[in-house]
Image 1: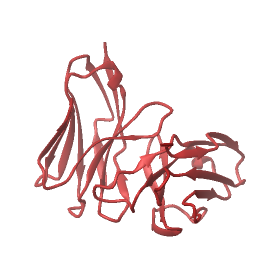
Image 2: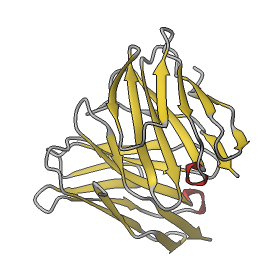
Image 3: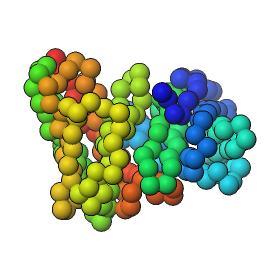
Image 4: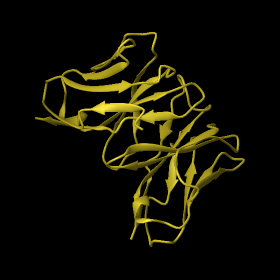
Length: 111
Length: 115
């Protein structure tokens, strides 16, 4: 059973456009929601994270929007660049417990 | 500061064999987690070790095992390899056990191909 459901599986965006990746969860005990970025041949790297008591967090061109009532959170990449082309994973965890990852979104930004 | 180091990076094994993968966490990190990454399933949690004790275990058969040493280095072992075990095995380390606000840092992984 997939604890965190991620969509879309793949995404193609023009340079300068907005990339949006969505995730949904069921377990209301989750208390930490990070996003990871993975380039080919590399391990995932933490991009940005949010706690459920915050509705939005922004770091540079990356923004997490969090909707606690809908049990959904999303990653927005503003002014998308070719260098953003990578696979993005959302995740969720409960303090002291394991991380559950989404199945990933392959983002391609076309110049 | 050196990152998470995993060895070997690439290996090919035959069905029925066993394999041992090694992970050296970031200096000072005492928690090590292992994940299996496949195209269809994404990242699946295998187990987590903290101070040489297994804290959590994912839903994998007993063929998958691990351990952590006193210097926080960790190994995972897969016995009686099956074709479906072909995957990228990722190790992640953190200062404290996984959870809220505690970032986990991944290594580059060990690519295992079972033929």
